[in-house]
Length: 502
View 1 (cartoon, rainbow, N blue to C red):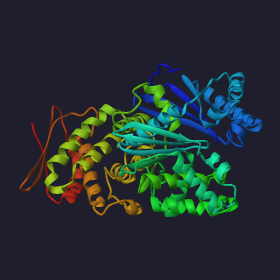
View 2 (view 1 turned 180 degrees about the horizontal axis):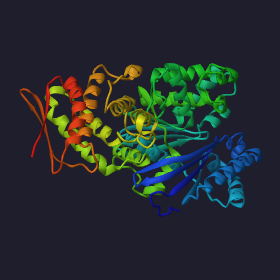
View 3 (view 1 turned 45 degrees about the horizontal axis):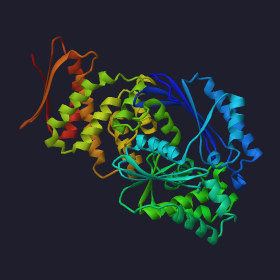
View 4 (view 1 turned 180 degrees about the vertical axis):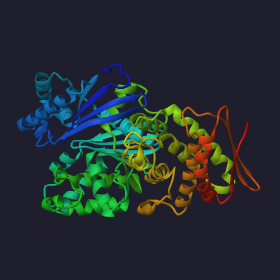
């Protein structure tokens, strides 16, 4: 049952999966944003050894212990709602009610066993509200089931489910250590027989712990400059190579591979092979990793009810990052307005397109997120929070550009050298322009509340004219503008003149 929530309320989700029991604790920030305040993971392996679908006594005891501990952690936060959701292991188990009764007796919690359609939709919500995907396929592989969802124009158009999760695929098809060629062919055949997709040009998004583990391995292999897994793109050729490498190694060899989670070393090859086969079937050239899925989707259903799909993922995540870091959303808008006016007035000089204006406006809104950590190093903290925070719907390249813009908005020369592998040739020049424009806009709105009642920017034959005026003295703003003038002149390569109007 959905509880009526208010901003600040805590929501707990306990995901009772075939491989693990996972706890997620979040605080609602608004109708379009929440922040994670705690999480925990337990390797319960509820679906291990399910002969004829029956849960074993050992598996049930592991599951019960995990839920007891998760409940203790959640209860300490006094959540307004606790959602406990079971998936494939409980769906297929004839003795699932025995486990559900045990949970109720020991914790007072009610486990809701999701249908395949409900599980798929919740995973879809978690992924689409953190990526803004419009068209393509989503693949969510857990311990017990594989969910493949087709997305059309931002709507879940079709969902399929098959018992091809990492645990079940390993136990049923991959008996060897390492698996034999015959076993691997049998698993790939099972994927083709149980899942039907239409190849197309859309995106393929991967959801779940196994996908994130594959991304972690790939990140280490490529010496990727960002630690961020959400939004990481793995080319098909590299995913295929990784699947072959994992399947060709013994369990002990896999455990020693950099990035391989010890608790997934035995089941990761099956997950990689299944994902690789789905990629081949969809014709996807790459896999984009989604850091959010089922649990976050269940949170969105609690916060937003029927209208759980966010209308604008990027705007919602920017608002959430502002609120989570103590930024006054309304107070940032005057800086956005001045930055926009500067960008448009100087378009002939910088020649940047609309996507750069969008990044400039986002940077203006989140520039203050590092302030509550440390005033004197607020620029560096802001960059770190951009890289690691919940900014969704942005590519990794855009994340780097935003981080650089907020870091060097007030002073200094942008340095993007560590991120060259994911940037484009003109990005350094463009970031230099954005930082100069944002620094100038912040100087115009130096004080809050601002005495500036009039600001104009006009490109002339002689350069750029900035005019500023207010009902009271604007000397503080003129001093701040004086510090930014040289940066603006260097970025635009034109003289800049500042004058005061009545």
